Amino acid sequence: MSTYRDFTAPIGSRRATVLRTVGTRERRSHLTAPRVPTVGIDIGGTKVMAGVVDADGNILEKLRTETPDKSKSPKVVEDTIAELVLDLSDRHDVHAVGIGAAGWVDADRNRVLFAPHLSWRNEPLRDRLAERLAVPVLVDNDANSAAWAEWRFGAGRGEDHLVMITLGTGIGGAILEDGQVKRGKYGVAGEFGHMQVVPGGHRCPCGNRGCWEQYSSGNALVREARELAAADSPVAYGIIEHVKGNISEISGPMITELAREGDAMCIELLQDIGQWLGVGIANLAAALDPSCFVIGGGVSAADDLLIGPARDAFRRHLTGRGYRPEARITRAQLGPEAGMVGAADLARLVARRFRRAKRRRVERYERYERYAQARRSTQETP
Image 1 (cartoon, rainbow, N blue to C red):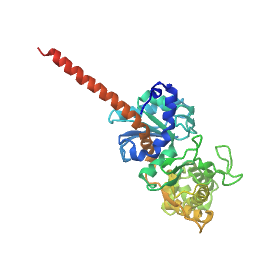
Image 2: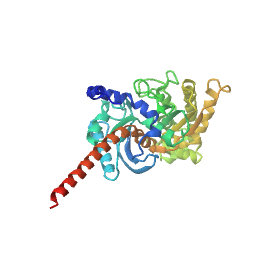
Image 3: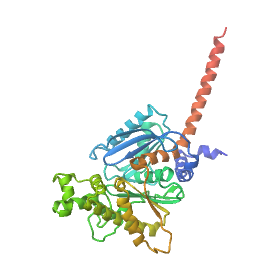
Image 4: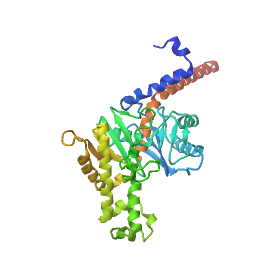
């Protein structure tokens, strides 16, 4: 029951109380969140994808545009997001917006602390967009959003302890436990790609050496292929011929395509990447002991060419192997839309509270209009 103190408490303290309840709401969101359409935004280094998603994870409409150049101001990216949301809102009844950003997001899910591919530095993205869009906005890391989508609608359904690993340009990740994303004290948990696996190894853009993503990622795959091609290695003749000598055109999808066609070097490179993937997964199993690892991101398109060697390496390096249950390792099911779908579904956490308040305002307005119309009709009657 409300008390006088509830109504007289300072606005700031009431807002803080609401923010502290978000975690509780998330734990039961898949059961009690409103079944309303929301917009999910997935922001990466090259693209911004926006879509209207229903309560069952179905994409009703999707838009995609290029990410503005990272040298531009944060407002340029915010303008792009706002335009996509407003465009979708013209055709759909949008109740909230969820944003999956490729970067570190604070524990309150308001500020993007750092985004490697954009000029966001301690950017209050949630508050700025909420002011412009006039609907609730939720911001989270893109890997957290993708993991949530796989847990709700994809490869992780039914799992109570799940770890997702996203293999793209680098390695991202997320942890879900008992239906809640584990973000850590400061919101930046899940940066698995920067675990050190080779002391003094390849230099990583993060500034350290030997990070996991330098050995098991899209960048690592392409780097190894280009080095062999540049050395004019006999094993690389197939891919050299494929790119007509333009080594800079070698890409991850190309390597996967040639591996499927039987190119021995490309198959071997994917096996190497997969073995390093298995080593890292074994380390994570020792620390987190999940029931399932979901492998997503662009490199996961190689499927068993990558995941088969990863499973083998995982079994060889798992601590206590032979005397403990082994986590399931599976490929993500939702593909490149996972981050967008997860961000939209997470947005329902805030859609419920604001939707009810908005509904009450609308109902009061409609009752007043009916009353006013009835009075006018009575006065006009002779």
